[in-house]
Length: 191
Image 1: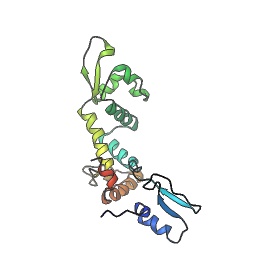
Image 2: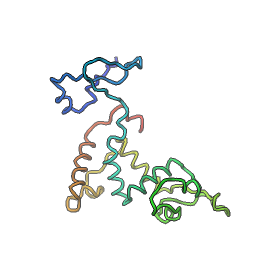
Image 3: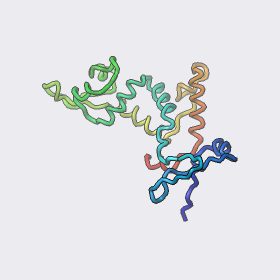
Image 4: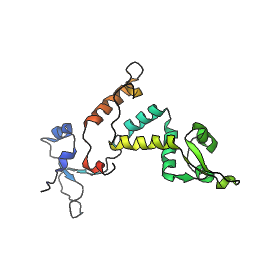
């Protein structure tokens, strides 16, 4: 028989310890009927499934350092992956920094290829190439927890103790903790 989890089970153990003895009631935001429960006592709502991006800052930094790309280029790659195939005009409408304004600059980075050539410039089709797609796919796999982030300095630049900054050291602590935690049930559907 399926046992219903309490709302407090979604919180970290340290948070659960801090709540002991407090007059704060922790509840899941909606009941089975879909109506919100409310009482006059102070309470905290737990929203299941809205924590997909909680490790975004760590995973994004790891991907950027691994592939040596800045966050502007990374955001453009995420958008282009969703577009699949695009024209020069569609690319020009994307918000992007100056160094990626021209499509030729993206082609020069080696992340975008011409898919279909045409004598009319506006009818040429482009898409991310394998390298660009692999960057985005690796990001999503690490973000969902499907693939753990390496803790070895051979595979992770942030793990190099001689070259990393205090910021990288803090991120490595988060990566180690992230790799130890089990994947929540509501994230497993992404794999």
